Length: 301
Image (cartoon, rainbow, N blue to C red; front, side, top):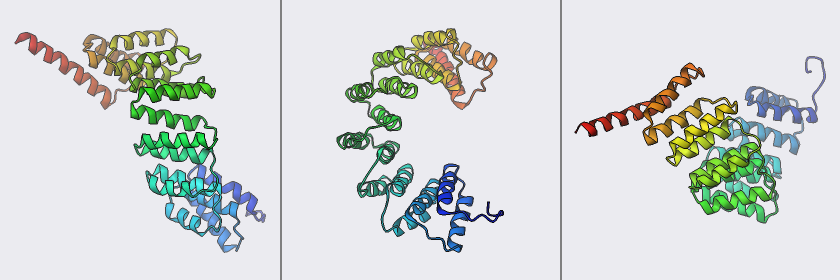
């Protein structure tokens, strides 16, 4: 465009800069920024916000913070970019300070802050902020709910898990595939294996993550035989297992001492499905066989 003699205006640059941030292409973004400076281009609020988003997305927080502090009026886009990046870097105190100072907040800024608390292992703060979001009348989206489900799973509170599930149903998100997959994991970690199974059974569509989550849920609760039965059902319905599926199955066998079944699974993983075992798979097999040797020693003694 420049080689053709066409001078890019602010509208074009405001479109190109977010694209650079989206693909994490800092070098091109910095070149555009330099071009604006040497061209004495007037940098308006929307360009400043785009630059801040670029630098924040590319983890150049020093420049993002410099530009943000130079803005006479902080807008929603720039503030949300700062909150999101600081939250991802687990600097939740700084993120919360910016968040609290925002005159207006949208679902993206709320979700970024909630996610930051979850990533920083502060699930109570995440759920508290989610409550505040509802009180402000902000409608949560799928991104928000995935963070909230994760917070609840980390807490292990079955009552809170039931409340989150009811909220999801009331807001029409209970048919969203990845939301339901997360609910299965949440209920399993909160001790509600039957509730996890209910979610699983009510799902009209299932993918490999769905099957693996339920297999893992049974394994987590020491019900290895149910994990194996579900795996057979998974194969009957034509779903293709992956390495995580087999890891969950091996863990289930290891947990209840199903040595023969574990060895068959390990063999089929390699020979039938062509999945290369990783350290975790070998670790499960070692634990499984060590358990067998321990039993033999106890019988001999």
